[in-house]
Length: 443
Ligand code: ATP
Ligand code: MG
Image: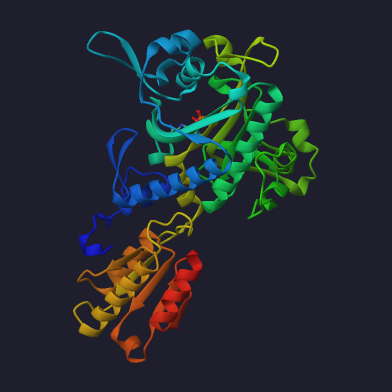
């Protein structure tokens, strides 16, 4: 992409309404624009990052054997009356009437609708296990939307639902989700710690929230410092293996890590003092096993091998896709702007032409730009007629992990400069070596 032809409305001033750094940086970097309280337009660069997160989520869900689908944002109130949640959900549910006076709502989550789809189509244990998921907009009429996309009213969520014959099978689905979520967050450059949580309106005893540690997080968390040493890495996992998935769950959840809702002072104090941590975190996902709560209420049953009709065991599993962008920025930025982890960056690298209009510099930039694209990479070429300082400031603000600087002085010696956004370190390379290096980083 050439910056002169892109839509990147960066702001010079710090917007006064933004209280936390991720919100400020998303506005300044031209990623989002508020359209009403807690409701945002995703401008091209914000949208690009959103798509990257979606791609990672799809890849990891499909790897775990889960099936993508899509349900509508507007739902009829009838199903929610059946489950009893139409009244129980309260003011956060946005209720709408259609022209015939029928009660509708904007989906805050989709247990009811997916259970209805299931009960209409599945009647035998032979069709189990089944896990389907979607990535779809949700609406919750939050009393205090704030912190930009962190607590919006409209927000983007991955929500998955498992249907299993037995509790054991459903717990395997729970463990599978835990593993796939660990992989997902790590690919986004994040450490998200699974913490014992509270069931809330979805219900159920088995539930973990995934939290990214950050001072601006809304949740108070208590944990054993050893949990922050754990990484999933690139280990191979067989998602069909009950033992392997259970093993990962045990490894990642056996140490103390809880939100304030489930915090137990006595258990916490049993940890050696130097390992006790009290901090704040951003909830970026949650998994639940809730048994037959919805299948009982909505009559989602199957015939088991003996011909008995039994209610299916279910769980639901969410990732806050739009909130994650805020969380990534909270975890990865400096005074100058965002620092995108390579796995989610909107463009792989930036090209800064120090002397736009200089025929040699222009030609070198063009060549680099085209060669990078040929290698399957997406560069952002700042080809504007602006001073170098302004170009550097924009690149630092939008946070691309690598910047290639091209100017007449370097070109005289046959080199360009490659700078790492995170460390600030630069090296001089021939254009060919530079392309080679960036290609290697991303492959
Ligand atoms: P919270 O406690 O933050 O209100 P929740 O526990 O009600 O969230 P879930 O039902 O678990 O939310 O939804 C799954 C994920 O969706 C959450 O882990 C969170 O990352 C995200 N999410 C929930 N509410 C919002 C919101 N208002 N804005 C942005 N993301 C949200
Ligand atoms: Mg939650």
